[in-house]
Image 1 (tube, rainbow, N blue to C red):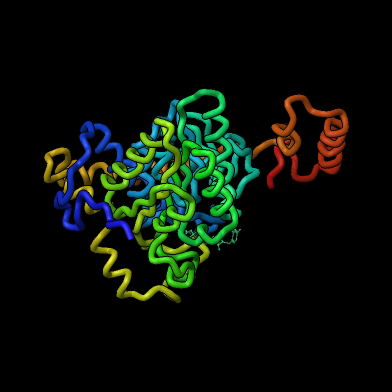
Image 2: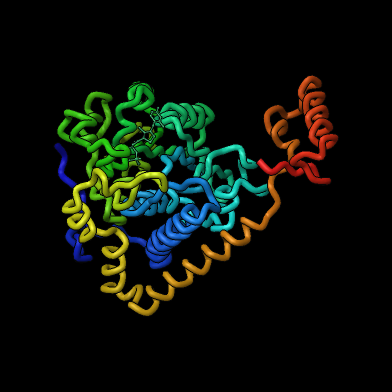
Length: 371
Ligand SMILES: Cc1ncc(C[n+]2csc(CCOP(=O)(O)OP(=O)(O)O)c2C)c(N)n1
């Protein structure tokens, strides 16, 4: 099994060669983790007070998303994400309000309320394929996108992320096999947070690691400390460079721990050993990066506290704003599917709007349909 790549240890001390990164990049990585935590905290409050239906906490795994996002070029690369990757969006400048538009499924949601909450999709400011609930579907899609870019002579790379549980899907096998054979410019990043809902990693695979599976597909496998944003950045940027230069895919396993529940519907205290939680709390990715940034003089205790406070205020304001926006109009059920709507759909749309309007039911004068 390959060694675990680590640059900053759990005490915030440098133990490996740090990549040369600008101060703004380092601070943006840190800020995106802080924002993700504040977003999760706000979502939990909204869910517990019945204002949103569902969310997926990122607590503990944020450095995997932040470190990998920093290694990608949003102008030419694509993200084919897992559903626990919110820091990628914050890193590349998606606003909190835009995320809450999706959480509330309002009329400004990019998916117009037709996706589950926390299932984001963006083409700007980064190319972020829609998060998908069926596990592993993003993996073959990422390979197809990467090969399409290669065929067109573009130099883009696709970063696809997934959990340890997702390595048991057929999408994982099909995607890695195809990418290995055709040298697709893809980076496969497994967030090994050691759980698939309540299924612990020892019931997920008999392999000695997830990274070792790369051997079977003819590509390099790298194991990295997933709570170390700099190490994740280094592993993903090396793999991206390799892919961009035409040498094909890499499988990276980011070893981390899910410190929260699987979702807002889950009670992890029923199946997670508290000793494990205590052990991993000491490896917290946010505290580790914060200690190192303070040591390097990029941050101090006051500026770090201020950033956390600002993020909490930002999330509250964004959530309140998104909640107050109108819902999608009824007609959007029919739009966005065809470039020009076929006649039979147009007829169905008219009849549907007329039906509800006549009954004065659930539609206002703008055709808004409270779903
Ligand atoms: C194809 C498929 N099978 C089962 C599920 C139900 N399911 C939802 S999340 C999940 C666990 C996934 O675990 P993992 O890939 O490790 O990601 P994590 O939630 O730990 O981030 C399961 C089994 C699903 N959504 N799709």
